[in-house]
Image (cartoon, rainbow, N blue to C red):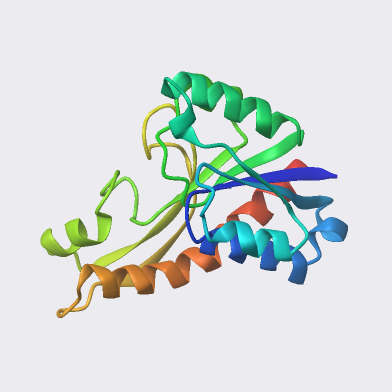
Length: 194
């Protein structure tokens, strides 16, 4: 069985979309895979309650308890590795990861970003797309590399930027597509491993 570990910092809506897809598509049978654990750097992350309700192991590792980013990432790797993950997914995990962490999971670390990469890496993507006069925005599922939001693209979805859009309205439309393409990209990655 291929174990998936999902990292979250908040509501975990992308994590929930992946868990629901795994259940509906019976990944345990069809892909020999399961979501084994959900890990958060915040004890009050809303997604933890959802994961627990689904019978998924949850862990909390507070980054504020560590003297450095490197120390946190080393402890995080140690925690994740207890689940022997085939795949580690970032789903709203609001931490920039160290090169050592990224290297440890090279080729099996995936993220979703709320823009059409390579455009608008980093934060505030929706407002930046509106300010730039973009006609389209979207989301990208990509492999994580040491350089922020630059790894190989696995899946993308496009949404229009409407004339009266606010960042919040655009974000809501993009999020619908995120929930569709992240599980799709994960399933396709797992299929390639079989």
